[in-house]
Amino acid sequence: MHIPLNHPRRTSLLIREKLVEGFRRKLVVEEGLIAHGRGECFDYLIGEKTQPFAEKAIEAAAAALLLAKYPVISVNGNTAALVPSEVVELARITNAKIEVNLFYRTREREEAIAKWLREHGASEVLGAGDDASATIPELFSERRRVSPRGILIADVVLVPLEDGDRTEALRKMGKTVIAIDLNPLSRTARAASITIVDNVVRAIPYMIEKTKEMKTKPREALEKILREYDNNAVLQEAIKHILRRLEELSTSKLTLELTDISK
Image (cartoon, rainbow, N blue to C red; front, side, top):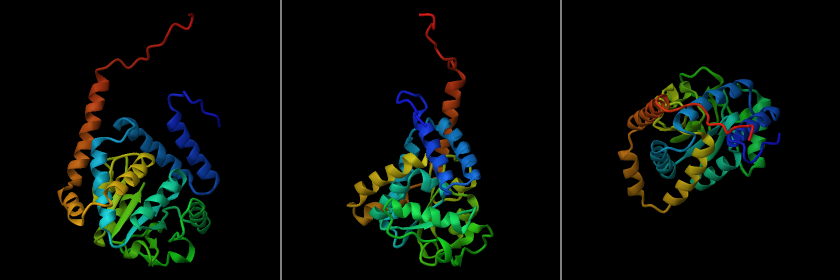
């Protein structure tokens, strides 16, 4: 599909096209398309750019990944379709494992996502096929199946576009969970250790930039960032930001100023 360079919704439409292509490649399921639409609504509300509260969370997330003994990046279909190269790059910088984990799990889909990530530079992808032989306690969806070499033994897990059940279960296992979720009211956002309220297509590249910048920092400085981070305060900032934007929009002129087409 050709999208004009000057189209006002070009970025959004390109994201949608990536997801549609991911659907054709069997990376994405129909439900993932619905989930994206819900997230896009919240992206409108935050202003479709990385806000200061997200930057704060990304800094903490970068510190957590760099301090981790065994970090793992969990990947679902939407994440694989939207930011495959970026996931691989972030894993390389932070020495993290990459693991496929799906709610709507089929062997065909697991292997398609693993293959897609390898095509984008991943040397190893866990969690596909027989590798997902371990289980997360107290979780009953297909997301409970994990790699014994990955999420099961991880101390820090990055879960872009996650559901709340697994976030809660991973926290109960004592893991630090970093979530990327555009909805600051979701159970995932509230259950995570660190919640990045931002679009994954902006958040992951920003995390790459931040981890590169912070990699030379002493351990004590990274630990200080984590000690001072307050996820509840960040979520409150995100909600207040949305409320301010809605208030501003409710008192501003919402009609488009159109030029006279007869001219």
